[in-house]
Image 1: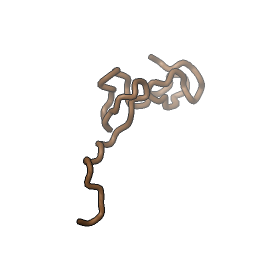
Image 2: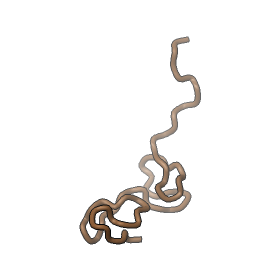
Image 3: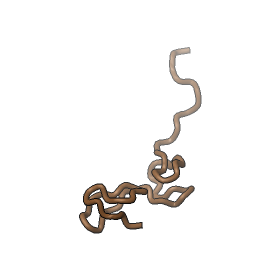
Image 4: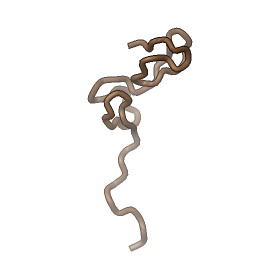
Length: 66
């Protein structure tokens, strides 16, 4: 047998939810566990991208919309 990875198949692409840590597959808009958005939103004050679950805008420091 040639060398290689014969274990479990690789996990689907995705990442952990920034709020609760649940694995969320790529392309999912909301966490199925806690409901937080998985895509960045725009800050109302400065239009910077605000990551999901952020409490403050990284561009201007204003509180993120909830």
